[in-house]
Image (tube, rainbow, N blue to C red; front, side):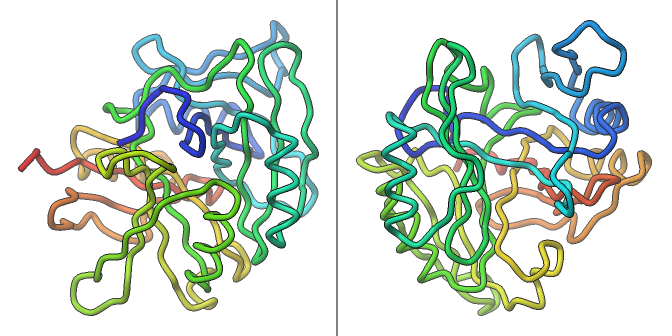
Length: 266
């Protein structure tokens, strides 16, 4: 489960870079029941926060990087963003955005793993991250699709100290690796990674990519909202034993995410 504490190596924030901020705000409002609050007074201000039941769940900003695809960026808590940069570079990753202070809110940096998968870190200041997790309309899991699971495990293990456990996929479809923060019990599992052929990673040009999983009360109803509002469905809805009913979706700008109705506790 994902929580709102400050456990190092656990997800603490996510934001979406979208070519049309207003359209993205309307889409996720319809699908996940989010409210969008611009951070500026101006009508054309291109950044703000998504809230659910009055609590901040994610950020939204204008996609400005030339040639970049619209995508969710997941941030992981660190105690020292500069030390994280050294760990990333030492493990063969690259720096996309060097560590920088966001006033007294915290210190952030963005990186790529050795195969190109993008992620970010957050060293908390007075802002610790999202205010709601593992509840309806909020982040409940993070997932990496990569062409080399072994290399990914080695890299992220070196950077974050993550603990791994492997499980066989249903129908002999390969192995799924579960991720738990360093020193935490298995009930704190926060995500997974799965190896796929490069041709199955076309969304990111053959490179690995992370995506978020959001809890919903009704997967089929959420999928209907996705398609009604200009999005599309890559897979599902389908039932996954012990996990719940889920669907892999794309928003109107092809940013990928998953909606999940969790299975009841056993």
